[in-house]
Image (cartoon, rainbow, N blue to C red; front, side, top):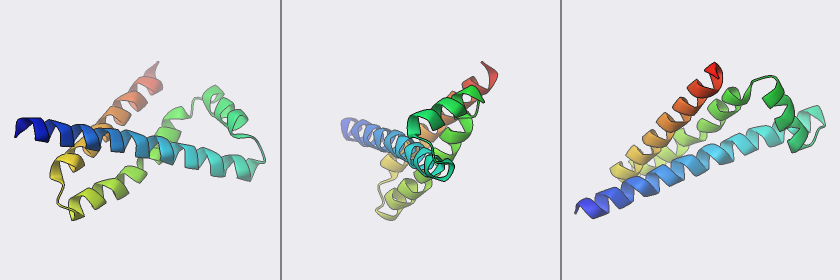
Length: 99
């Protein structure tokens, strides 16, 4: 039983991390279209200005959707994995803000 719980938690964690990366990419994609730049140059500008934490935060908004879907399907351990992925994103943001 514990093996299944760990597997479900890892699936939720991976899903949360992937949705965070997908959300960050989508935000960069739309921002680059508005500014008429390529995605690479938009990423370079955000790194130069120290705004990568903001990109990660906006990408993490997609985690709400994944979390809601897992709760509706009563997959609580996967939802916990998504929360863990959000905590990891918060730690990364905290580190990027201070270093």
